[in-house]
Structures are given as C-alpha cells and as structure tokens.
Image 1 (cartoon, helix red, strand yellow):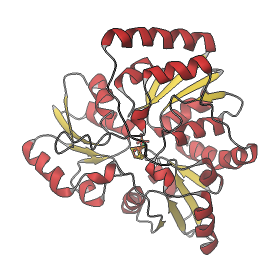
Image 2 (tube, rainbow, N blue to C red):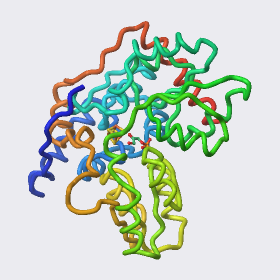
Image 3 (cartoon, rainbow, N blue to C red):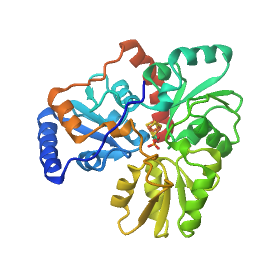
Image 4 (cartoon, helix red, strand yellow):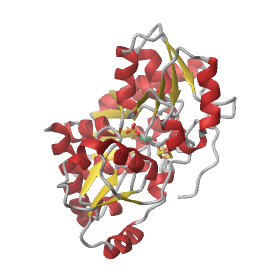
Length: 322
Ligand code: 13P
Ligand code: SF4
C-alpha cells in the first residue's frame, strides 16, 4: 500500500462534541461496537467501547455480540476482526490505513520463503495481511510473542515474519534462534540510540519504555520493552513520576488518562512528528461517523482465506489464554 499524505488536525471542540453525539447515536442504531487501537486520535479513543493493543482488540472482536464492528485501527487489525467474526459487518473509517510491516511481506513472498524452509514453523506477527496469516502456523502480537514462541517445541525451527526487530527481541528473551523476515515499522525505526540517550540525560529519573518494534540499540537503553497495553500497567505500577515513551504518540493520551498525575515524555527529538503513524492517523471522528452511517469501507475477505487464516489466530488466542 502506498503511504498516503496526511493532514490530521482535530476539529474545534464544538464540532467534536456534535460529531461525538452523532457517532454514539449511530452506534446505538446499528448495534455496533467501536474498537480503537492505542495509537488512535484522542477523540476516537474517547468515544470507543474498548481501547487497547492488537491482542486485546482481537480478544474483544472474538467476544463481541454486536452486529457491526467499527474498527479504528489499521487494515490488518480490521481483517483480523473479520476473520474472527465473518458473520459480522466490520467497517473501518479509512480504507487506506495500512501498515509498513504488513506491506513488507506479501503472501507470494512468504510462500516462496516457506518453500525454501519446508520443515520450519511459521510464526507471523499480527501486523500482516489475511493472505500471510492463511499461510502461517501461528500468529503472535507484541504482547504474547515470547509466550507463543516458547509454546513451539524446541526441536522445530522457526520462520518469523514480518518484523525483524520484534523477532530479534523475542530471540533475546527466549534464547531461540529464528530466521527473520527483514520487515520494519517505519515509525519505530526512526529513534536512534544517540537521540534517545540525549532524552534520557535530560530526564535521568524517568524510566524509558520502548516498543519491541524499536531497533536493538534503543531497546538496550530501555527499562521496559513491551506492547502498548503492557506500557499502561508498567507505568501505573512503577513509582516513578515521569516516563519516556518510545512508541507512537497516540499512546500518550491513553497513558495520561490511565495514570493521572504522571508525566509522559515522547521519545521524539524535536517537533518533527516522526512518532506519528501516518496510517493510524488517517482515521478521524468524521470518517468514523460516515462508516457507521453508511456501513462503508466494509472488510470483505475470500471465505477460504478467512477459514485458513482463522486457525493460526485461534491458536494464538488459545496459547495466550492458557
Ligand atoms: P501493539 O499490539 O503493541 O499495540 O502494537 C501494534 C502496532 O502496530 C505497533 O506499531
Ligand atoms: Fe504499522 Fe508501524 Fe503504524 Fe504500527 S506504527 S500500524 S507497525 S506502520
């Protein structure tokens, strides 16, 4: 998917209030549930029924009894909801909300890689297309990747795709060797050891919390490396008054709500907006209103792809719950 150009200033407060009322009315009329990722704009997080990481959102999608799932995240997340709930209508505010990781590995490329390693177990990060999931043995998220890899018999070699940084982190945590696909998140690889060290020197008492999609030299500096949802728990439980957060900027809204009184410092080096995911930020409250009103931007998947992709996702949910 080609990276779209972005403009994502929030509307003025009165317009936001009116839009929020419209969204809530439509949600009731449609018997819909609104799921939002932690990177979504504050006004979308505030109107959602559930805000969380990829794992939590999958679990919510699997459990919902709503007729419509309005998924405020990126395309692979909406596809995952559709795979888990093929009978429900899944809509997304902006169909161009993709992901650089999902784009880095298509199903044909994975099929060719598998062919060269026929004895390997394929573990795919949830940030991938339905076609890639359908070719995988098990899916993982950043919240459960270590547990998923540990659940695979030690004698079985592993292909891990598409995020090489998450893969390297899992190798360090588990001591398991894995073949890694060379994909990256274009947002998380922008932070460098040098830039993050500088922020740490400016805030010596603040623990650094980094997402595993960050590069190794940044992860090395971190006091905690974890999924976005686990960041909430870490910051809530840790007695520190301020934290440096190396992940997408939307996370700071969630953290500020969940941990009032604590200070969260984005690990950006200046006002470059380099920690905003241009895909996540395509979704707006207006587009959420439109997709609920018109049931537009529906996720449609080939029934066979859906069937084949469900098994490795279900395996992940089962291992996570065990
Ligand atoms: P989480 O599952 O940790 O929320 O990560 C999703 C993601 O896309 C990170 O860039
Ligand atoms: Fe994909 Fe990175 Fe955006 Fe997450 S932050 S959705 S991994 S491009």
